[in-house]
Length: 406
Ligand code: ADP
Image (cartoon, rainbow, N blue to C red; front, side, top):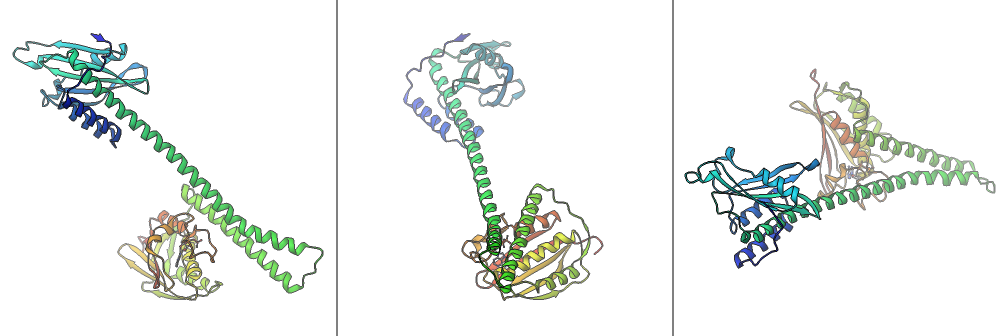
């Protein structure tokens, strides 16, 4: 039997308190299922029912039970439980409160044979979203006096669903805004980084081209050297940007082959002699003939970067480049006795574009180097970590799986 939704009637003080608590749960629950459980438990203290089912409307007017609890009689008998589907369908079709009952056998012996159903349509933002069904075994039947309270329970469950929808909606807006902000940051960082060398190149080239001034040979060379260096820097930045986006999307091709790490580290340390900021590199090769399966260009790029960072951020320092094995891993460490890195920055330095504020004002860089190092090593199933103490120095640890032939 379908009935018009009742006008809310007077509630006693215990019921009022339960309604108030339910409304608090509806607007504060962090998770729908936990919130539903809480509301149902509160409802049980003031409203008699054995089962409760929440049906959601799916496409083409079909209903799917999405939450069901057996709390009273028949709890241990779940297979035979009544879930009131017919009641739910009628409530959905009529948009009205529905009461029904079913007699399945001699209920004087088994109360489970007599079932009463109460179905309440639920609306969220003026749209019917489903039906809440209460079931009682053996009675008492649902009567008019029950309806206001049942209606309150349904309203609060609908409120909980609406609140959760709103939270989801807001967090998706927040995600969109966050991504937009990240993209804006990304574009402004790149623009800034690319514009700096470009500004030098343009400035010095324009100066050299001025027809009203005759530059002496020494000045001309100086300006051309700056243009040359800045063009290199631009090239390096663009390469880094390309590498970083290819590593990010997993499209950077690696050419794996057996690589002798001691030989590679000797080459890397020799290249460091050419750095503008001098560092003295001590090689400490505890293991020789250590072979890893790697892309030699990419792995050498990692060590070049670590030594070039030592030269930039710990200039004129001692650097120890050591090689060892630990179980199935090659362990290479790059240790400097420079200014060190404060603990709050340690993990961030592997993030794209992260540069330590203040420390790097006078040193040029893009914050891409260590991000690229970590990505390259992870593509080799390896890892890079850092330990550092302010005033004492920094050590980068690189781990690579040993080749089976080592
Ligand atoms: P970049 O050198 O282009 O800024 P990196 O990703 O290579 O970018 O390094 C990130 C940051 O880590 C640097 O800006 C610097 O602040 C810090 N850093 C890296 N290596 C060292 C080091 N050896 N000593 C102190 N700080 C370092």
